[in-house]
Structures are given as structure tokens and as C-alpha cells.
Length: 74
Image 1: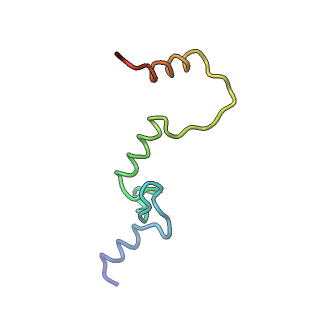
Image 2: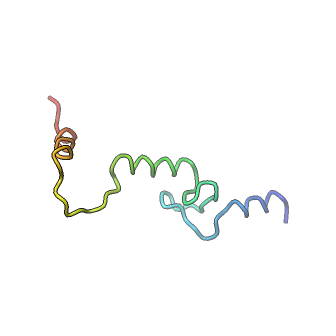
Image 3: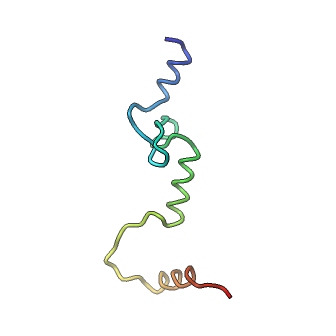
């Protein structure tokens, strides 16, 4: 096998798909296939797209934040 093919085979993670786009994962960005997919996932975390359900009542600061996010400016 050629050296460049061996390098490519070593860099790929066997049978693992990127959770963002479904492409094969590269070890350097595991569990993602690229820096782009890694940053998309980070932006979703920071934006609050991934949330865990909770039975706790929101505190006053959380309510104020939610009102500020939903307020429509005239």
C-alpha cells in the first residue's frame, strides 16, 4: 500500500459517522469529520439548542433572560 494511502487510513476512524453531516470521522476532529462540523456543534451548544429537560422552576434571572429574548422591539 502507498504511504499516502496508509496515512489516510490511519487518520480515519473506522465506522464512525459525523453527528453533523454523516461523513466518516477523522481522528483529529473526532467525533466530527472537520473543524467546520466541530464549530457548528459548539455554536449549537452555546446558542442553547441542546437542552436537558428539568422539573426545576426557573429562578428570577432565568425568567428575565427569557423575557429579554422573546421581547419584540418596535
